[in-house]
Image (cartoon, rainbow over all chains, first blue to last red; front, side):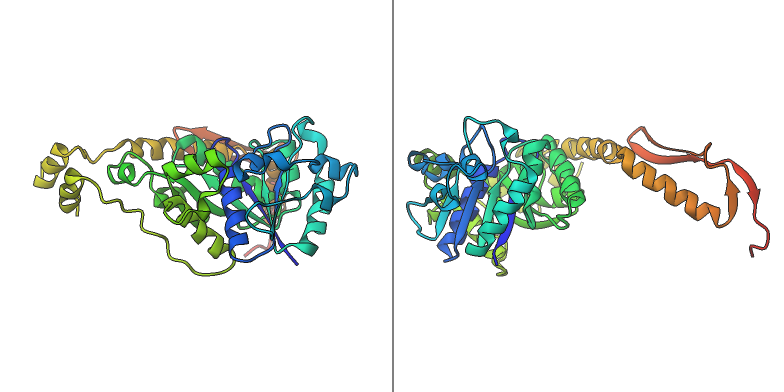
Length: 263
Length: 91
């Protein structure tokens, strides 16, 4: 039986889709059979981040309306044959898939896949409620900003009310230098406020922009720091204990002098 | 001013980075958000309060008022519970 994990955040633009793509690909790279679901109907993007946009024939709405069989709509990944994507519909509206349909869909996928990763739309309305309906676990993505952490807090409350009792936090786009100079909230600050378990920390990294440009998840790039962070997150999801990676950067001369005096 | 403060100032670290402002603003906004409980939750709280207090005294359930107050960054629960009579034999 597979495990259904929803990736959510409340606020848009914090990296839900990038996180979904990298976790899904990371789990597939570890040898697991993975299905990724894009539930952001009307604003589909997971296909583009995965580089699979040219292969779409059917979508999630076709599946729930029985215009096609589930297998026909699942797109096989370019790189891993144990990784599939069920894309969102681009032309339908957000109410096209309801909670019950989502639960049915997840139940079917669980029979065949080890992990089902659901990319949730932003917001707390219908799309969010449907996306989480079939999930057993939730990953909350946030960035070190007041607005994103506030929305994460609200989402955690809604997840818990819906029976998803222990969501895990991914802190995205941490900038070590700014945390050091006291101009960015640290991971500890956010954990303090949100009081949930940490799943991983992803540094702000140019390689994410480059990998998204190419449609190749950074998790497959050995040189990418963000990619390493996502590999660690994928391993933790499978139950491995992986220590947090060091986000220390070898800063310039002034940085070094300052670090000596700030001890 | 301590020596390290001087050094920090020279090298651009003044000790009160904007993150403290962010944390404080976040704390205040969350106190407010979290205190904004739904009607449902407030009704449950009301029923539970009545059940507990009823063990010790008879209260006017219709006149009972429970509300959340948010002022100056702190939240408090305010309950106004008119007592009709206090039960005897409670030691």
